[in-house]
Length: 426
Image (cartoon, rainbow, N blue to C red):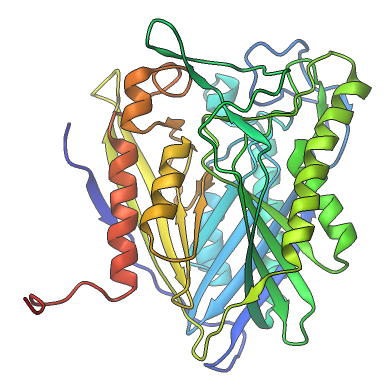
């Protein structure tokens, strides 16, 4: 395999809203992105219906814009399966002075299929342009609502997922897609990580909830648009915390399925099962939110690196896979590593163990460059033993996951100022 070629993206940003050098600024906004018409649904090749037949619950895009020490970054969470957009990155940088944009997907399998690769056609559906316009509008509103803010962090834990790559008698792994007995196959990461943005009076503006479990509580018989369990969680949290914008960030869930699965084919029963999953997660989020700790910062800062790493195809070495990643450090305390596509759990586990910070967030399913969606990104061990997302249904070369995480760690040490210009003391 060839060594990953790294193309550094030069970052420049200028403040739009006036602020003190001592302030962290934040703005939030949301917009509904539910398709106005029925169409193909994302995620299941064996879905039992054709197009969607209606809407069970609305889909949203939620924007959070942060600025400190002249650096501006935006996080947008969306109730969608996947996305790749050149327009949003270009417009955010040029019109809103947001050079770094994190487009984070819940990966609901009950959202619309609109990208060309999801539809198996040459061009995306018109919904992509509609979506880009709506997301930009949310970013614009968030940018216009910037005001001084403070950060708090917290953690909870609840096991609502299982590892679907099960080792079989032949020594190879194969996926357990349906687990109606709720057997807690491992490994998993039960940790719920919270990042809250408050105004200076202590009123919550946004609560980012990080958890790793595929948004497939609804199965192949569902034909209604739905945000799946993350949508339930966000709605319950917002009801319990008036004024907050709850934002779900999917972790490295490439091999993690939910323990609660609606698979009866009865819509009422299956949605009740999905709702239970979301309510359990919401209960833990609300409980953990009461013990969140403020992030002390005499000089708020946002420092980051955005890069595109180049990889070959696993089965076709002539193919090229550009993978855009962003390493982000906030107030020298909170680290965020983004990976697009579908990373397997081992990436998240390694990041949290190696970052040497108490709050190391892993943002899977998150695009930070306008590159194509790279699909599953398995770690070396999973790729060797195989199974869905480990060798089956993969495209990217083996070793890409480890090289991506190596780059994140290189970046993090750099952002923390740990690379000396000359050798240190013996």
